Amino acid sequence: MKPLARVILRMLSRPATVVAVSGIMAVYTLLYLWLTGDIAGDGMGGWQAAFPAWERAFQTRGPFQFEPVGLIGLGALVWTFSPFNTLIAAALGLLVGSNVVAGWWLWRTPRQCGLGRTSTGLLGAIPALLVGGACCAPLALIWLGLPIAGGLASLTPLLVPVALLLLMAGLWLSLRRLVREESLR
Amino acid sequence: MTPCVLRYAVLSIALGLAPLSAAPAAPPGRDPPLVPVVYSFEAFREAVRSGGPGKDGIPSIDRPRFQSAGEATLEADDKVIGVYHRDQARAYPQRILVWHEIVNDELGGEALSITYCPLTGTALGFKRGETELGVSGKLVNSNLVMYDRATDSEWPQILGVAIDGPLVGQGLEEFRVFWTTWGAWQARHPETEVLTDQTGFVRNYRRDPYGSYNPLGGYYAPDSRRLFPVMHRDDRFPPKTEVFGLRGPEGALAITRESLREEGVVDVALGERRYTVIHDPGLDTGWAFQNPQGVEIQAAELDFTAEGVTGSGIDSLEAVNGFEAMWFAWAAFYPDTHLYEGKEAP
Image (cartoon, rainbow over all chains, first blue to last red; front, side):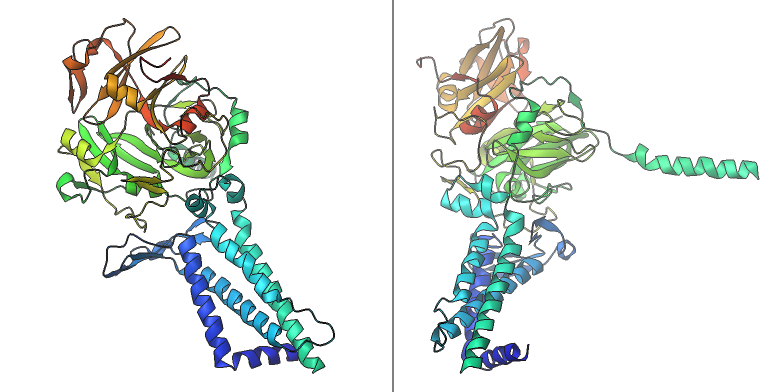
């Protein structure tokens, strides 16, 4: 575990890495919340914030979807805020950001012993983004006008856990490859 | 000692039975139902799909709050579902119901559920008795599958008949609700109350996740595609075309809204029964009647009031429930539906 911790610490010690992970995490979080309907348009302009339903924080609307507790309006945007939806989005975003950055590190590390150039981290980001689009299968498909909601909606309970597993596995593999590269240098 | 033990035993049994006696009764219904059921209940159950959200993931409004018409911030063209029951008028904005689908309300002392399915464009009213209706999270032919909180039986909204659970085969008692605009409803019922967005839930009520009725767009556009599979497909009209439908023991009848508007009064026979559907130009909907004596109704002699349609011959007719629906959904539930497209049509 020590070499793995050393690689992670080395990554985190670089401000550029932290900025990149944070930036990707923020973008992904917003994208996820937009695709699942928590953030949307038709705002009233200006800004408003009201949190009248904290008692519903733990109440679910569907698999890995929680009831909003408050409403934040900013210009044309309206955010029906749920702490747990935001936490799930941010956790997925952190993993996507970490995967992308780990993949970037792998890509720019000099290759030895026939290690491939494929970035597992970047591949890991793809299913995560699909989760963001498919987590609210009906909503996303309505926008696209695709008549396949019947098939996809039944998969909804699996999408977040599968994405989490894939992203964690992708990050793990990327970090292990980085450790191996370091040990061969 | 023995009487004391007996007393405790009786008390324990009474306390044990108390929750049973307090359980709400099933919704009032009809068995057999008055409406046609053209597939087996097993076929319906096999056609049920998950809509994505879980049970009550689309939460019904169980403590509705209302405001006066003057306080409402609705545009004249905004869609509302109107109810006039026991001299009381209420409007339920579509932009609120699209997020909740069911309002468990009480009008004139009677417990009612006002239901709306955005995917099939259908608004229906059901008497709920002592229980409440909720959203199961399931769909059949894209139509909302409701459940009752007394028996957990499952009821597709358009069918109005339980397809699963202890009450399978029983029909719910319907009452008329109106799919109209705020301007039209307010003109007919100036004293109407309006459902407020103080629903107990946080939603973006200014936004319809499916599309727009004003102007018509997104999922509601006639040519847009349906999202879920159907039990029967009929391409005679674009899928989301609105028709006015009614059901009787002999089958179902769909009337194109254009023909209803143009002709004013439509007479159709379904089997041995005769039906008369009258267009209400104010609310732009139909009033459906069974017309056993074949009374001829003249549109020019009719008047439309808060109570309904009045005029020569109306008293001899028997009111039948009717409602607007997207064509694909109507045809999916009633593949043998009689279709009325106007006198000139073949």
